[in-house]
Image (cartoon, rainbow, N blue to C red; front, side):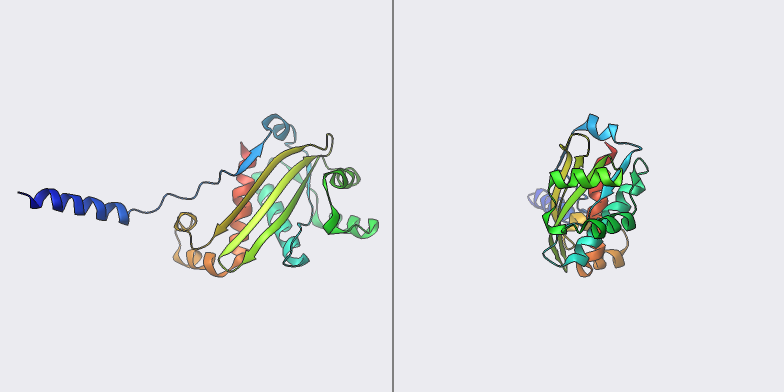
Length: 190
């Protein structure tokens, strides 16, 4: 008789440890809903991200964020080439762009919103970003997000049913960066 409760306890414990993890839910963001909704169907420029890992990583992060925002289908994205041209024409230093400078750049690009970002970590199995959307009209931050994710995190892997993709999360920081940018952009749908 005593064996039945013990066996039930063991089987319950076993079933709980074998259950698939709950997919990662991104929650580290804040936004002003009305201001974000007002930007829909308007032009957004994603500036090259700051990166201590090199300017190419910063450009790649901005490119991934542009694509992720574009896939939402609710915003017009300023072409990367146009942004690069403006940086060359104005001899802008990518490392010295603050909200005030971003507003001026936004006006020159005819954008209504500017995305600024920083790559905080970029290595095998780990990517971290911090981003913010600044209104060109008011100079205020409308949206901001920050996170560091690890490809080996089972909650992150739960988003990828394909085993090859789960392995790639731990091996390819660019793949992990793409996923993090998609998580960030999903918050713009609110």
